[in-house]
Length: 212
Image (cartoon, rainbow, N blue to C red):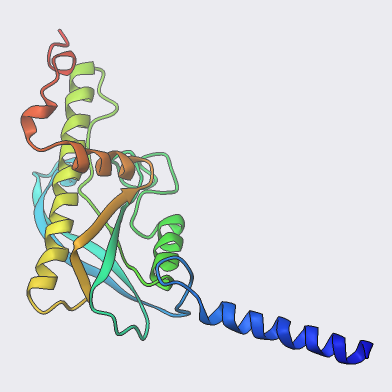
């Protein structure tokens, strides 16, 4: 009798495990095991000031992103999560940090996890550069604000690009009405700017303009 009872309990337990696995919820649980990554997709082109570090004039540069999708997925109206990297608006290493690119390990890990839950995740690069070593406070402040504004412009361009892909064939199977953005460190600052700033004049703050 005890043996039959134990067998029944084990059978019910395995059945419960099976039901639990079948009841995974998309966007909450990992419902995919594989992720397809399309790297270095050009989402925009704009003027970068980084060449000035080598005493060269500003130049047009391609802005690129990596797009993560769940492998084998047939859904064509998936929400999009866009993530911006950290880096203090300067290239990695130059910024005194080991991070500062769209392939930072923490960025890749998050995008992989989101894709396994069924989202389309996007890690993008934005234009960098400002003058943190100037002895003039006005120069440091103004170039930092300009760097932040360029980052916001690029983030908005990233959103426009994803919406454009949906309107021209929907290669990445997204829902253009369900796009969210976040970031790490400096990238979070950019995301906040995207959410709160509508015009450049909103950045005209007296304490940043009257530094004399």
